Length: 373
Ligand code: SF4
Image 1: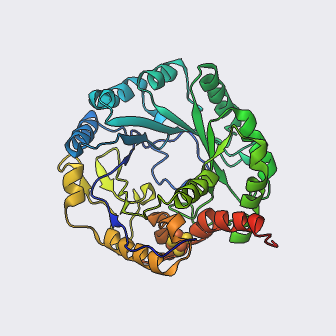
Image 2: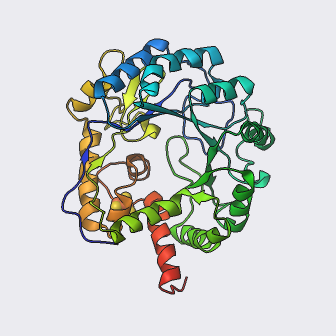
Image 3: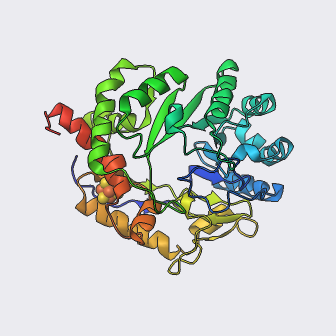
């Protein structure tokens, strides 16, 4: 995949992505969901949003910080309250220091939400797993399928001319159905689709996992079929194309910094590296919380003493950089997968990195080098 890097990235003390939980409740109850508190509603106080906006101003980035409103389902937040949470960021947004994004199941989209999305130029990501039969596990608390409601929300976005991206979780049921998935998303009208191979994390600890061979076959079909759908960007293939373009142009300079990706709960409690660590208790790491933005700013929390899981993850990155031939493309994947699969952060390979990173590369090599699988 490329020459060994000359250095191991530091965990950054500045952030370009901030994940924020406006509400804990989700109106759906997907079988693979990792969130422990999705059955009860806690709303983020406006004071927390004010502290986050102040933190971004203090950081004074050259590029906009992407503030991702995640959940729970963020659209369970009462609309007036959501407007109050966005208000502290508005001047920063207008000054180009903040860009908002939202990840939603789209079932609660209505005209008022469309107005808010437009006013604040919110980038929309919709979660949908393909045609109805692959969405059966995305059901509500009464076990009713969510597909029709999600499609109604998507139609509203399309009719309003609002672009959206899609995240599709690929389970063992979907991994052999690349053709159908691609045809479905090409028809859906999304700008791009990211295929998240189902991961073992949080409360989702017992479902059958996709194997690396199944994933390799899946990615190979996507490489073969994607030219038929030139208007649909496939995030995972674009990631490899982007890396290859940079190396061929001699612009690849290695992984300098790993984004700490702070995730802030409704209460202001903050974890680093992976949103899936929020709300998780583990004896060796306690609750992963590095502090609360109500008492310390994010820049102060990030420049303070690194918690042991961050130091451990840096050691994991060092091992990846020296041991793994996929390092240059992968950059270490996500910390949470190491913890949930292997119980530690200073480890290297996981099923996640084999299926979501290595298999994408191996599938491309199968086709370019006449691989046999
Ligand atoms: S996370 Fe996995 S694929 Fe990525 S560099 Fe580490 S071992 Fe390699």
